[in-house]
View (cartoon, rainbow, N blue to C red):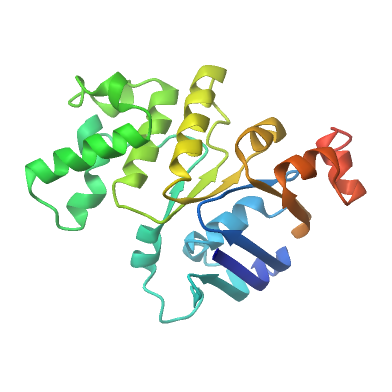
Length: 250
């Protein structure tokens, strides 16, 4: 079942084309890995999916992005509801200057949930899904800034999960993490796809090979090809894909 679909999507910053006529389909409960060299439009596309690019006054988008068959670029779209539905985890962990517990329940509190027991349940569930509960359950009052980098990133995942999204966008979530922390984030992703649709932008082709169900290769703002991960890494259709995967450029 198709969860996300773009049709003839064009994106511009200062009238410079960043994404050109992009048509792509992303399925329910899959991890789609997006790879490609710098300036290929990967992160711009990710930010189109929850309209974060709208925050830039020099950004212009044309075409459609359908989520559950609703065009999110429609002027009638409630952007706050969209961003609740489509959560995002950034390259650098950005915990709030609050305790671990207050970080996780920040979103639910803003949505009006005040019952302490309910908030505790949300925190435990979200931290468990982010593979952090066992490490932190006795230190929920600890300032989030005192966690390790890997723990902070998983805390940010938990904070995203706490508002019950349907789609999670990961923008190079392991770029600054050590191999052990990276493995824990990847383990969380593989488990999360049972409930969520995941779009992962990564510069680590090995990571895309490990966790993605399908992989899309972007180059200069265009989709070169998209296919099942195993096929993409063993028998890509386009020579440019093969050259990128084999390290000849990028």
